[in-house]
Length: 110
Length: 119
Image 1 (cartoon, rainbow over the protein chains, first blue to last red):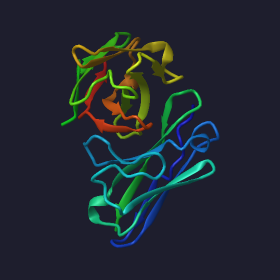
Image 2: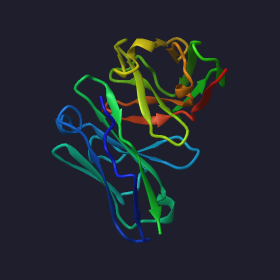
Image 3: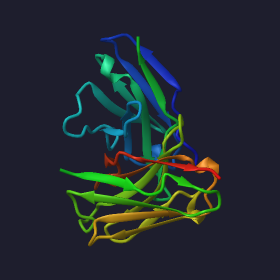
């Protein structure tokens, strides 16, 4: 299985909205509503931000939202804040009953 | 409070076998739907999923690493163990364990343990 494809970097100014894409295949992203998103600050463990495409765990800001269309999932961060600067990874369940992560996106707040 | 913590050697030699232990608390690996997985991250690189073991003893492995990995659980000790054979310098990474929640996401992660492969 190949890693899901994400843009290497995305940037935005405080208060703006940004969207990170995550492209897979019909065997992973397109085949299941089991896409999750993780935020990782430098030197820290990843933190779950979105699960099942669009659900937020308790405690995660509603500025984070997820969606999916075909083989591409997306994470949108609205009202961008300095604390949102981090690496973001998508993940999907696959047809082989395994999991695959994305290539990762570095979000920079200008 | 749910916690997971990885433990194991920080340095292994090429060709050796790596054994990592994930000790967890605050949940049970006998609860239906629950699993514990392993994910690694080479320095400066992306996350890579390795393996998962479920409450019902089902095990799943990364297709590219399947021949080298074994995951087991000891529910009495609240531990999950990952072994990786024939270690190579490219396996140098931070290794994380994480709880797989009933839906297919890893909701709670350990702090990670850095493993360096070098002679």
